[in-house]
Amino acid sequence: MRFFKMRNVILPTCLMAILLAGSTVVVDAQTTIRPGDKIQLTVFNHPDLSSEMTVTSSGEVRVPIAGDIAVEGLSQSAATSRIQAAFAPYLLHPSVDLRVIAQGQSVFFTGSLVGVVPYQPGETLQSAMGALRGTVNSSPAGSTSFSNVDLRTVRIAHSTTTSSAIDLESLQRSGDSGPRLEAGDVVLLKAKPVRVDVRGNLANPTTVYVYAGDTLAQAVAQTGPFSATTSLVSIGLQRKGQNSVVSSADSVFRAPAQDGDIVTLQPAPRVSVLGMVEKSGDATLQTNPTLLNALYEAGGPNRFADLGHIQVSHQGVTRVYNVSRLTHGDLSQNAEIHDGDVVFVPEGHKIDFGTFVNTLNALGSIKYLGGI
Image (cartoon, rainbow, N blue to C red; front, side):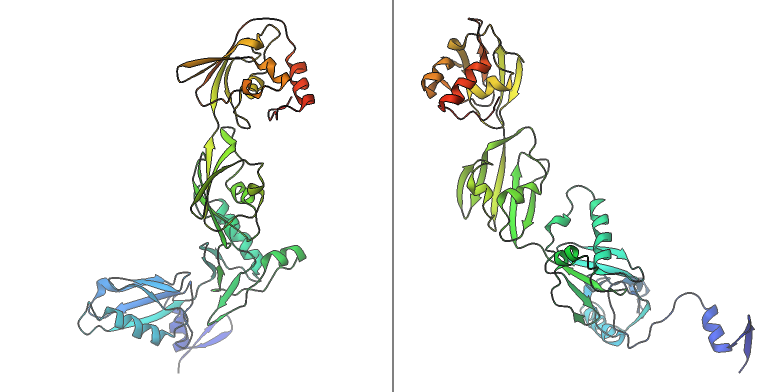
């Protein structure tokens, strides 16, 4: 046998030939296939069907005309037989060869959240999850939310074995970095058990997942804070086929969400408040769609306002209200206001609106959500 000498290392000719042949290295035939592995598939007499492919995080390869085929955990020979059988309906006497030419150097995530992060030596479950969170946070709007993942039941698939459920939240609280990972490991994630659909007055209607016991308010909060145009007192709730309207202050909103809840956020009424008020113009009534709250959102009547003849125009019909009678308990004068209504405060006697509202609060005759 001839030998080559390189930097004081003597190599046999056959090994030297392998080194010079290129960077592709054929993996031991007994090695099981795992996600991230690169595979060379040769379909004899059909070069158009031959190609290199990478095993996905779900353990499959996409084979031309045969479709997605599960190969994770199989030996190369077993995977070859499976793919060859998949070609049988399309080819006459198919003959294929499959070789793993490179093993994956990534950690894969599948289930409720799918992703791939580069494997780093010493990688732990916590560090890999942190890397995944970074890729999710940089994803386009509308992509799956990391907050939907059930971090209490994370599992790791390694080769042909799968770990028991790992409570990642407990590990985080204790400062534990979690189990070590290896290149090619698959982290199995599932969604939290309670699904809530949130629709209506928000940029992107979405589905969120929360833990059992989490409140409806916590579920809605995953979509972001209420916008300034969303009603806080007229929120649609569909639960088990029954429809109701709730307020963000109601007990049901602070009680546990139920799987399948549908929450519809309604736009708050927008009205015009004109005349003798501090801020004449449009006002949004998020908290309480009443005449008194409309006046508050407009900065209150000025000192020349006539509280006894306030006009409210609704769909072409105008009614006059005397809000000063509220101090005598006449709640009918605090009219309900609807989207598009126009409130006009005429000029009249000099008043102090702050003193007027404080009198109402002292009497306890009205719940004034706007507050002064």
